[in-house]
Length: 512
Ligand code: NAD
Image (cartoon, rainbow, N blue to C red; front, top):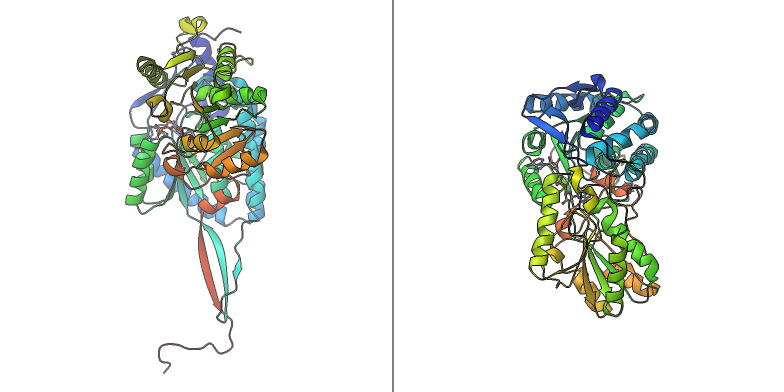
């Protein structure tokens, strides 16, 4: 299948939007309606050919205000419903996502450049997230504390109120569902600001949330707008009670500081430079596939990408040769083609950043064992393609071995023993994820315990599930998403003291 022409893709996006957004117009989704922005015009660019797909206006302060007002109303209505009814409403959102799954996946593929085989899976996961948290709605309860006084003391997990969520471009609808579902399960209203580069599927999800039977219309709003304008206005708004950010460490630090100025807590899900460690005693065939999935899945635009491959020196040369051979054969191409495993990079700026980092590494003496450029066959497409790339022959202090590339670029480092492997894995300020491949199960557990990371795989890589907590150590952020821990992150605990004594001891004061 050849890449669609510019006008084909733009026309198809318009068709899909006509089904998914009221009036087919791109704007912020507030209480189920589309509100046009008042700010600068922003362009949506097709990653597969560089053509413009559509324009929309940055939301601006009046739209943020409308979303905040809708959130207040929505949360009040949500709080008045029984927990079981809230669960049924979340289940209804999941059903709508499943009903529109193919359209949502296609829209994501066209606008974000992600291969259709990936976006189909990610949309299905969004439905699973709403189903999982639907089940939690009537199970989120406190506990009774056996205090030493005559009181009944119990806890309640109460919502914050309005939560602002800010998300990046690499997995737009997945990330939106990942954060909206636990937030509303815990009783909050959500104002989500997706990346201005890829807002369409998040806006469509906002519409489905408003349409689903039982969902208050204002409970979830989605802002179409830029970070420093619309996103910053939402973070600084007086109604905001919690900020959840997924994105780069640089923007995360600014947003957490802005939230702190508003005396609002934040959760930060940031980037990584995760180590994938291969011991000589591993099933090397499986490790070879695992290493490719770890870095080349999503064209490396994945926060948990296994971007540093640590290989035991005795198998290093052979393993790199096999990886380089495989890298030359992974299907790279149009994201609409079901056979494509690596699509384009999401945007020109990111593609140029990736190319610049690899060129700098080569200029500093690195050996580029595979890739290092746009594949020849895709040069004429105008798309932001970059081939799967393997960088060898650098030390752990090299920039390419330390800094997040966020692209299909694997840096390989040899090691001599387990202690050195763990030391190399930990020689980074990040701590998002990591993996180890070994035939020695004791070693698997030892390394899992010793590597500083929020998620770690033994003889696997990249499996995540809504039921299991996810989050970073160190510069990869703080707070947890997914599972029961996300519900704790989206609630604040209240301690209630009820006097039960017939004659309470009066310790202070005067009764006249
Ligand atoms: P980014 O930080 O540039 O942007 C993320 C979001 O923040 C966007 O919606 C943007 O508009 C907004 N934003 C930027 N500045 C802002 C400001 N001052 N105020 C309010 N909002 C602002 O990140 P990106 O380039 O879109 O995404 C790539 C990064 O995201 C990578 O570093 C990647 O590792 C990280 N990421 C982390 C996870 C995770 O769960 N840990 C998941 C996906 C991506």
